[in-house]
Image 1 (cartoon, rainbow, N blue to C red):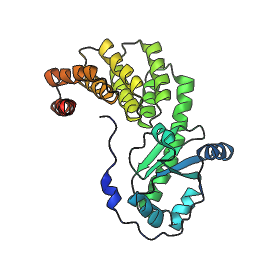
Image 2 (cartoon, rainbow, N blue to C red):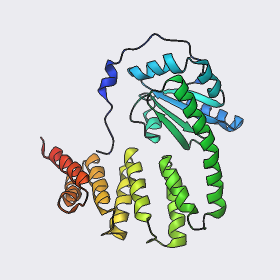
Image 3 (tube, rainbow, N blue to C red):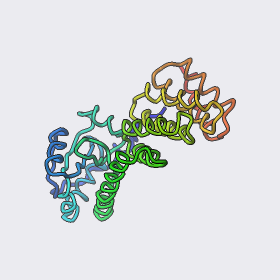
Length: 274
């Protein structure tokens, strides 16, 4: 399936002694966005769960460090229990903990830190993310002003997908189709990436639409294996067994990538289990 299961091993991690945190945390999402808009800052969201051992260690080791607290003063920081706000966690594709998501004042994802980092590495990574956020803002402005120029919309679409901003990526892809045509080179690659992004967010109808677009426009293209696998996995998550089997069978019988054929066969075997 597209969505991965949480690693139960985290349950066994010991929870260290609680240390004083150096960060002024909020606990509400919308007020954090409002505060970011007013102060022109980035929002750092810490998604945690009560049972996550690495989350407790991040609190004790990293968030208690004075240098981490100092760099976090540049942002609006909010802690959210992912199990109490599942809709927000899904919005950002959170599938493991701790997940630290960085967004702008509109809620658009800028970047993320997955898992535990010790203080020095965490601080360095945050500084990198804050610096790159300015570069992305310039890219957004460039797309707004020069989206009709060759390569600008394509670069922006690819970056939006990396940042899990699906709707902005769709806007950029629509611009490419308008300027270069619906059969423009490498559009199939962008649609595949976008489809897997939608799948990771649990937005299966959108994932299916992307896969079907690739097969319709590029039936014998280099991404046909991935399109069939995407469709099979998305239909599986929607419990549409016959459609799922049709696409996964195609991958097993006609696929060119051995690894993808093996994964398709594994999913087909799961379908046969009672």
